[in-house]
Image 1 (tube, rainbow, N blue to C red):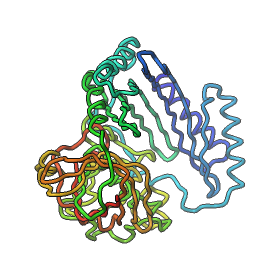
Image 2 (spheres, rainbow, N blue to C red):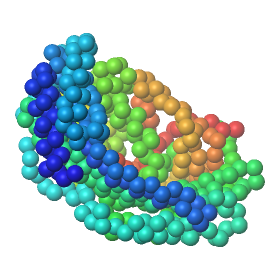
Image 3 (cartoon, one colour):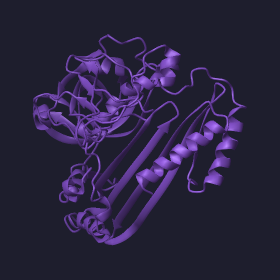
Image 4 (cartoon, rainbow, N blue to C red):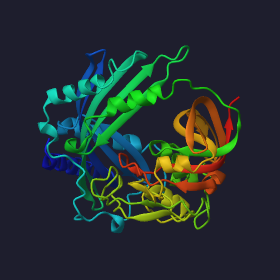
Amino acid sequence: MTKEEKYNIAKWAMEHALKSGADAARVSIYNSNNSTVEVREEKIDKLEEANRNNMRINLYVENKYSSISTNRINNKEELGRFIEEAIAGTRYLSEDEFRTLPDPDLYYKGGGEDLKTVDTGFENLDPQQKIDQAFAIEKEILGKDERIISVTSTYRDGLSGSVMVASNGFEGDRENSSYSLVASVSVNDGDSRPQGYWYESSIFHGELPKEGVGTQALRRALDKLGQKKIESGSMPMIVENRLAGRALDPLISALNGSSIQQKNSFLIDMKGEQIGSELMTIVDDPFIVSGRGSRLFDSEGLATRKRNIVEAGILRNYFIDTYYGKKLEMEPTSGETTNLVFKPGELDLQGLIASIDRGILVTGFNGGNSNGSTGDFSYGIEGFLVENGKLTQPVSEMNITGNFKQVWKELIAVGNDVYTGSSWRLPSLVFDNISFSGI
């Protein structure tokens, strides 16, 4: 289905909703094309390809709201009945005066820089090449160590796109591609089976690292041999860049309008207040060329803007969509993150490790939870004991506990190793006075 065809169907559905009694409507059509090749024991274990089209319609009827979806979008007669029945059903719902389309003045109006978020050669990639890349990862591992128990290697790709129209004037479309290579290895360590995992990803196939994924996964598995608990205590914690999002996620969730309105946020009424150390500066930047979260508008059609979220530890902005903006009497900013960019420091990971007399480098989180309303948390971790600036012992089956309102104020160092394979561009982070529970 071409972009023009999707626009035509979306506009027809929107107009039909209005003719059938809706006061306002927003229609989005999503398409995706994904493939997966998974290899195990030198054989293809999984080979999948999926192509999907889906329509979502937001209906506003007599101060009542519903959101419906269907993948049967090519038969207008059937689609028309689906919309009519949905409108009739919406009339039975409770009124909600805060459910409206956004202010048209806040919409994306077209234009803007090409953010280069799609590989134009996606559909021309040879399927055999995908299979070969999955096998190549496995070959980096097999036979390299007698303690290897199992190896899984995976190639994945995806192309997704959407068009969206709204009855009060919005019209926009976007498209994204992605590629990834993944390796997982388990090794024998007596009574335990340590696992190593590594992946690389890219928007463009030509920029996807084709070598080293398997080698890295095996190294990380072997490095875990001899894992054990160590004595409990309070000490610095280094979180490597690929895991830093686990520490940041509860804070970002607490900045969401729904969490604030539902009193499930430990950062209510904290705008303009110090919530972290002066090393903590986070910018939401939607305009990074080929950024994983780059976009010109959000899921409501609001034009994106570059915004400071935290500046030298001071909270500057929340993530507020139209609905919760009305409920909270706050200006909508968008309820979504784009590219979250954490201001880097000067040291790489090895430099951060060298700066610690005694602490723990966390390389994995194993379960746990956090309380959104209080900020209290408890997570299982694994990683390495750091002594005199060197990794000395792999550790596992330990827990960390604390409160995020205090933890971010204990941020004492930030790495320069920003991980760019995610929409959250985070470096390795060092927190002081973390409570570790072990022996």
